Image (cartoon, rainbow, N blue to C red; front, side):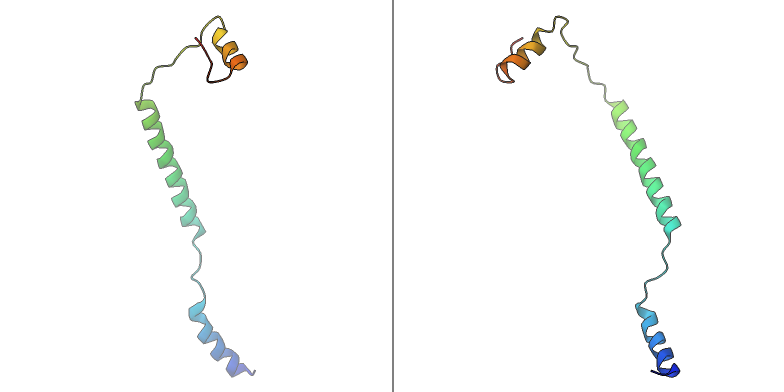
Length: 75
């Protein structure tokens, strides 16, 4: 293969090369998506007010669950 053939091959293969990567733009888009997801998740989690069920003070429920299994737990 001489120099002319090499130049011709280079010109033909140039169209098959992928375009240069834009790592900076990809990183900015990922950071923006992360922050938008955190903001939306924060809005949804703080927007819902669910009541918290308090455990019993005597511990009988926990002992019944451990000793008798999940189906036979009594309150």
